[in-house]
Image (cartoon, rainbow, N blue to C red; front, side):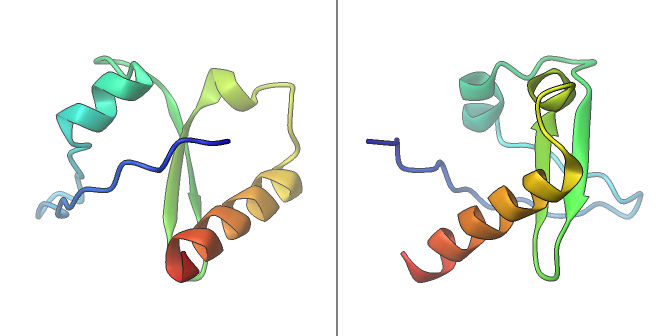
Length: 76
């Protein structure tokens, strides 16, 4: 059984920056300088640690995983 996702609200600054809430950063181990891959779908942006996907998954497979996750979040 998978854990429920952490959900929080943030906003985009005038410089286009987004703050990842502390609870989420802590859970995922994101520290200053952590490199993330940014993937945009029709209605979502997904950030994933580069090391987590490097050499393990193709972009198309990543997009399918993202669509599945956003669908689950949308429809419960």
